[in-house]
Image (cartoon, rainbow, N blue to C red; front, side):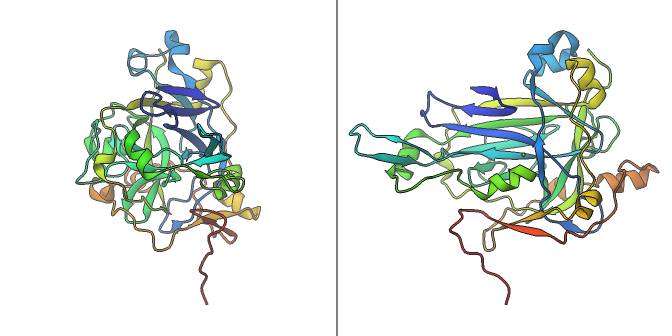
Length: 355
């Protein structure tokens, strides 16, 4: 089951386990410069508004109605990232012997843009691939900002009109058919969860699995021409973590999937009668204000190699040069002088510095 709550998608599988629940949010963010540099993590600037497609069916195309799901607004050349939420839970066991902590429920989540897998660059398919991991593992993967083009490097998700030739979908398949984002979630098998994550006594207050993500989120959280696709933008340091569970741990008999349509700002207004969010600041404006960039401290953690068809993608800037166009306004390189280190596991983790 998928629900839309507080502008987030909530995937839950009560028939598998009462704690089988995960959230996906869509964060507005800075578009990092599309240049020769590889940048750190930009901030979250609040969540995109999400709306049910079915609530506006009479104003949408047959294709949108058929695909169902939800929709969000983006300006041309605006960027976004996906935030994955899981909370540590606590409660009473049957014997009422104090409070017990329950681990967040693991999920395998596939993410595609224009039905191109954001991890492998292969065409969309239901099911998980054991040979070449084509999914993210939650809650270990805290977020995803773009296409995995090489080990530890992504190219940022940037919205461009579908049909203009910039999207990953068009570059890889040669067609502009789908656009948007596609998600499908598979829960861990219930007996595996119970075996791997037995409850433990609650000793102190427990918050989010990744507590530092809170501060990051606070800065980072029928109509013609209605489709937008996601294109590869600037380069960013970000790892896609390998699956550390057994492949057989995932319940591939149960899944939920959602199509996330992207409407440009003018189309959003005509469909919903709502104003889209204001345009975000540029990276240069943000840096001049002395506001922080972020770096996730995960030294020593392995990462998927990435690449494949995604390695050959041309960025929006590169495509624009070939076309004789200027698709990215305000693409000035910046220096992130103030960088905040985030810890992947907990506030207790000690970061090893350079000395």
